[in-house]
Length: 109
Image 1 (tube, one colour):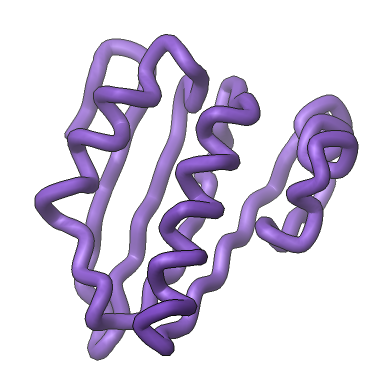
Image 2: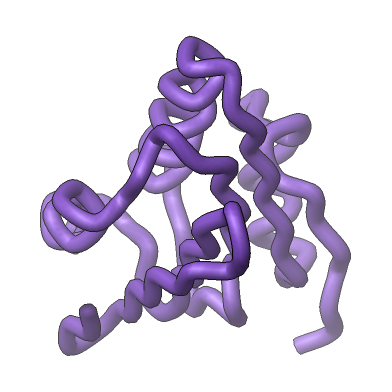
C-alpha cells in the first residue's frame, strides 16, 4: 500500500513475513499505516521489519512496532527490525527508549 507520503510493502519469505516501511512514518499517517498492515499481517509467522530510507518517523510509529513485537512474543513468534537511519532519527529512537526495538545503522545524509 502506498499513500502520498509513505509506503508499506508486505512480502512472504518462506515461513516469515517481511514488512517494509518507507516515507513519512509519523502521526499524520499512522492510522493509514496501521490499516494497511492490519488485515495482511500474520501473527502466526515470524515477522521481519525493514525501514527503507524513511524520510521521518516518530514515537507513534515506534509504538506500532512495539505493539507488533509484543503480540508476536505472546504468540511465541520472532520479531526483528532493522534500518539505516540518519543520526537525528537514531537519536530519536535512543532518547525515546526504543533502541532495543530496531537494529540501526547510521547513514550519512
